[in-house]
Length: 428
View 1 (cartoon, helix red, strand yellow):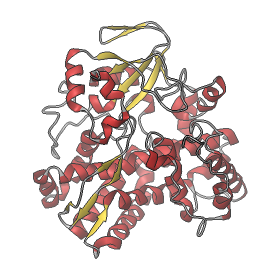
View 2 (tube, rainbow, N blue to C red; view 1 turned 90 degrees about the vertical axis):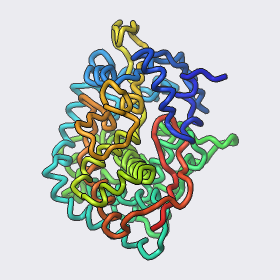
View 3 (cartoon, one colour; view 1 turned 180 degrees about the horizontal axis):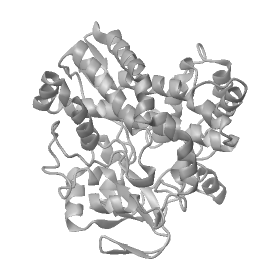
View 4 (cartoon, helix red, strand yellow; view 1 turned 60 degrees about the vertical axis):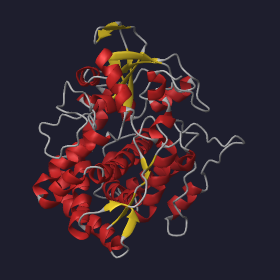
């Protein structure tokens, strides 16, 4: 019989749901527990890690990068397979600590302030209405597929990616986030038919699975040659023809080509995938709680709070890793320098020490100190943008479709990292 911690790290577990009951049992026993690492094809299995399960201790780890480093071993459970691979992923902002992290974040901050997002909010609302209008007469749709297009269109505008190339971003994020799921690992939704020449050149470099069906390690440059070729060409384009987008601002601010390419990788994946799963995850929450669904339909002023509760209840990003830099203690558990420390947001977001009746979906919940965008220096820079898009799409659904209902089973992503939705059929 599998142990409780084995259940938590097994990606097959998440084809059904987050194991909330298992998390609750462990969380009631201890804030920090030892977990063995899952086996991952093409990656070495490591020695194990400390899983941080309670809300307060998760926040403690996230706000203390001097003790719990993103840089030392990067932010995924499995160690990069070589020193070269580790050095490569350390170039990404996600895998850095202050002050280097702060320098890159400062370059991006102005594009994601509430004032900056307000300038594009009308276009986000318009895109959301267009997407919903496009399916309204059908009486049904796969909400996961519908929702996927909104973050792609928004990111394309903010980052200056030609709109017709946006499905390349979809494929790249599938391959990175969905490496544990065979349906996503070899994603090829982008088509050369209507893409730019820059995109067509990149598509020619798509990696192919080996004889066992595995793609190269997506954390390495060699594993994503098409993405990096596109990022390189995009940087050159922005230097020649700068616009008003984030990527133009980065190249004119003196960011190196290597930093640009890694920043592009990060935002293609992080900026797309989290929201792409939060949207159908939020819809699933509404469909599973009719009374709460009808409250928001009847009183649209509840929508902002409902979005916060969707994020807490669904927890799109389930965990991140840090590495202890010194001998320390966390939740009464001694931690040695070099130990892996993995915070489980999916557990912290259901901690009764932080939330009253935590397993209840409550659109009027306040306060709602959820951890779905992280905490501390790495708090998601795009959080305000993500919530703006969630309000826009759900508002469009409520206005145009009214009360929707399930039209089949939700199909979840096989992953212990992203709480993903591949398919969510609905009808109206």
